[in-house]
Length: 177
Image 1 (cartoon, one colour):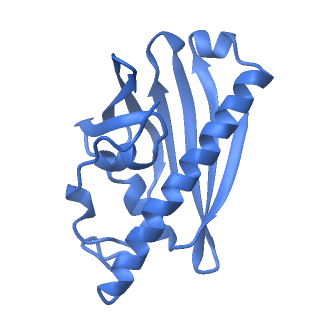
Image 2 (cartoon, one colour):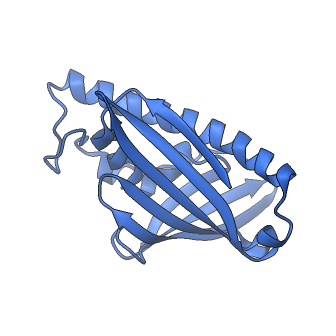
């Protein structure tokens, strides 16, 4: 299994607010060019976001479904990747002093990806996670700094780390394959 972690220098609440905004996935998920909620209330169980992956002139449209959610600490997703099948992706948040330790655990679940899963694909997933966690850190740390400049770390939801207005943000063009 591909497990990777990163210490993000902002509160777990700030990181959770980014994860809980289905419009923002394209800002930090490597390979995703757009994302938007399409079913349910993200990140409630069985809610889904649609996303697009661009490979040159090719446009692939898929979706990711929430399979398990513990608000503020754990989000487990099933990402659909067309002919490659699906993958289970768990994102765990742990308070680490005033910061947040983020642990990502991903493995193929169904389809071709699970059949050809080997050390080589694990290496590719590890490299993707390194880039993804770096992008997530950049987004979250910027949100945390902006919240502090506004005079605190409480936002619309009234939870530590909430960022006012973040829920209405739409991501596009942020990723590339």
